[in-house]
Amino acid sequence: MNFRRKDKQEKTIGRNGLISTVIFGAIFGLASGAVGMLMTLAYLPAVTGSSLSGFGVPIEPVVIRARLSSDMVVRGLAGPTALLYRSSDLKDVILPVDAIGGGAVLTSDGWLLTHSSVLDLAGSSTGRGLTAVIGGRTYAVERATVDSFSGAAFIKVAGTGLPVVSLGNKSDDLKVGDSVVAFDSLGGLRTAVVTAWGNVPALDASAVRRSSEKMQKVVFLAGTEGFLPGGVVFGTSGEVTGIYIGGSEPGMQVVPFSAFSRQISGVLRDGSVVRPYLGVRFIDLSEQPGRGTAGRGALLSSYGSLPAIVRQSPAAKSGLREGDTVLAINGESVTANRSLPELLTEYSPRDTVTISVERGSETREVEVVLGQMPTP
Image (cartoon, rainbow, N blue to C red):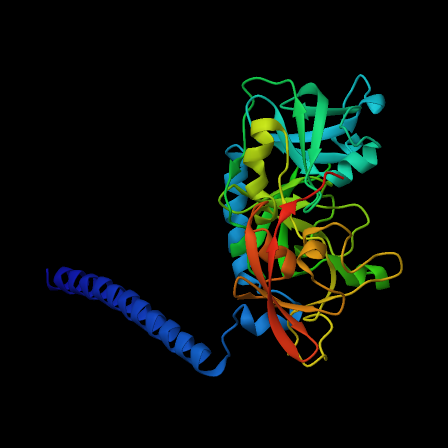
């Protein structure tokens, strides 16, 4: 009997010892992990987006936003997008790789958004000869309206009940490192990264003289391999943020939505684009500093046969001269962040604006009644 009690007691002690060992091991493991974490935080530098700035863009925000966007697109962005083809190129089997451009559906009755570079590729300023494929169905393009300021093109097909994109003026909120999405030439989703906001590159001396009637600011992207000209670029919430220019344009440029958003209502109402008109060519001094104006203002300048002041334009009628430097419009300064063309987009034809100009050693105010931009 005594031997049995002793054996039972030893088994009890053995089980208790095992439990104690497990508990001790767990506590030791937790303590070791905590010490390891503290040592890591103490001796290793934090890796953040800014610490990787030498690579061009913050890394962590881009990865997070890309994950958000992929699920968002699966839920319905493919429906209101379009592929554009030359009608003469269509075969029995229509392949995405044969498309010359992309677009998106603005209205259920068939207004689409794309870029004028697609019309150039099709060799048709009217849009005729183009076919849009939306949701697996083909639609002949009937007509086109081009905003010559931004290059946005609005094309019309005979459709009913088409799915439409979500419009939102979010492009001004895009920052370097932000992620955007678009569909590529294979119909798949691609993510690209905003690398800069900047001026349209001036590739020669004539292009240095910019027009008051041409968009100056664009968004530059990295990772646009396979993007189609005219394809709509979406933000991570599914809203339209711009149009991919494509073609031979350098720097993978996107026309920001804010550059043409105010024109959409006019196009949908009567098929027309209405823009204010000043009629000058200028050198942006934020790009070419050194004239004593602290790198701001627009120097009215001609080049060859391109005059600084367009004949019979509102600028000519108001008395603006070549050599004047436009400093502000209605008190809002012309700067690197707000160019002369951008400031003008805030106004309408027949508006009277006060333009502050530097002429020689004097600064004077010139009143100008803006006209309506001529149709190209």
